[in-house]
Image (cartoon, rainbow, N blue to C red):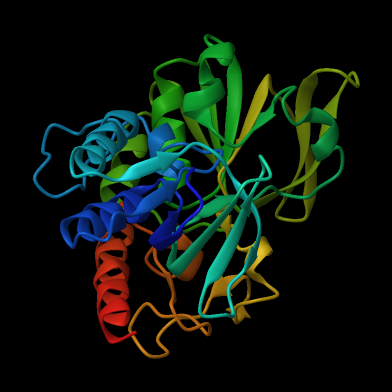
Length: 310
C-alpha cells in the first residue's frame, strides 16, 4: 500500500467492521479495512439467522456477511487481507503493524476485532481439540454425520449449534451446568420439540474430562449432581461463550475483563484519542449481530466527528 497517512483504518470484518466501513465510505474518509484471519467474523459460521431486521427468510451468516462486504466495497472501502499483530495508538498518528511486516499509519482507528470461542479448560481438552472437540458446528459438523455428539452450553449459541447438529447426527446431547437457560425462548422450544427424535438434555452437569485413545475422542466424564457419569461420544461442541479479541491492545487501551472500555469523549471512544471500538470487543452484554452493526455505525460517525475537529 502507498506510504501515506490514512484517515481511518478499521480492524475486523464482522458486522461492526463492515457497517463502520459503509458509513466511513459515505463520509468520504476513504477507509481501509483490515479483515483479520476470521473473514466475516463469528457470524460467517452461523447456519441460520432469524433475528436480522428485514430478513424473514433466515439467511445464513456467510451470505449476510457477503452482502455487507459487497456494500462496503461498492462504496469504495479498500480491503487489506491481513492481521494486525502490534500497534501504537497513543500518538496523534496511529501505527498498525501487519503480519506481513507492512505498517499502516492513520489519524483514527476503529477496532472491531470481535471475540473468539472459549473452551472448558478441563482435562485432555487440548489433546482432543480438532480430534473430536470443536467450537464450531457449522465448520466441523459434517464430519460427525450419523454419529453421537454433545453440545455444551446454555445460551443461544449452544441451542443454535444443537439444532444444526440435530439434522446431521444420530444423537445430540445438550449439556448444561444449570437447569435453566439463557437462550432465546424460541430456540429452547425448537430444541425441546426434538426430544422425541434425537435430542436429549443433560442438566446440572459439568464436563470433568475428555476421554479417548490419545488420538481420537471417545467420550467424556461428567459430574452430574456430584455423581460421576461416563458418556460415550464421537464429538463435543463447546458453546460456552466468547473472549474478546483485544490482547494486542492491552498496552495502549483501558480494558475491563478483556473488554475495551468506551464512552470517553464519544460513545464509542476509547482511552486513546482518535481510537474507537465497536461490536463484541467492546460489549459483553448484548453480543448480537445487530447491536454490533449499530455500534459500528456509531463508531464511524464518532470518527467522522473526531476528524472534523482535529
